[in-house]
Length: 331
Image (cartoon, rainbow, N blue to C red; front, side):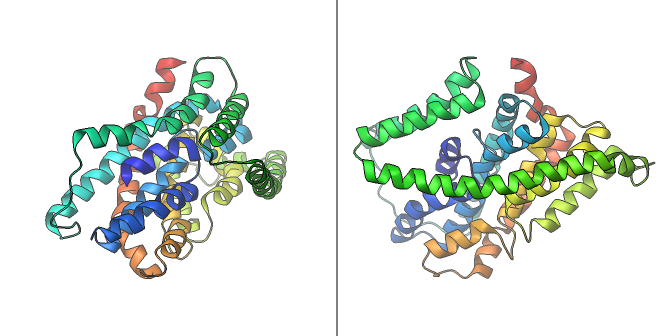
């Protein structure tokens, strides 16, 4: 589950889409094989959050566009933290499996040839990822143009594999336009808010008064606590658009790197995706399970992943090079 969510995050760009797409396939399959329902759902909810961190990430695109931060650098900065968190999730699942009976006692192990044949069917996903990443990091296209390459590849693969026809293509365009249209209203409001905050010099006033005498890490702690609280009531992207006009100038004002800020805030948003009472990933997966698991049970199963994400943000704060190593190396 963790591996597939990590891989699918490289094409979805959002946490909810990753949890929904992988969960709709993995949950019924694993439950039918005798895996523990709660543990299966928890792994999907936790690993689904990686869709926001593994590039290409919608949160990085919106953050970079609003604050004039290089989207290519943000994409690079998200790779190592994303893989690191995926590794932590896997270690936790391995430990839990050794302590509790959450997996069936006997499973049919596929042969090496069956594994190779199964992996060979992933070529459309690999092509889709490459169609976005290669033009972007090869210096052939901007982030927007790379997204266009990804769209063209997705449409081409859809017709090639016969999973797409003219009617479903127009339905997909209609759904995407409606969703993007609603998002753009929020984005426009966030831009107006940013401009108003800038004209009123609110960040400067906060820096000169509220943060006077406080260390940068005290300020960061207050920001993190605010995100943990607000994450209980807002989905990730709405939270990002509402808070970035305030948070970005304050954190850059006390000395934090803009690219690092983008990664840190994204992890904070990921925590909100599995935090009740909203927790979008929880609602999605509870629905996929056919309400076999209650929202309370789902929240309980994701508590370890909540703490792992929090631990990851702490490591990122202590060792900022985790996020900044690749952007500094390649730019």
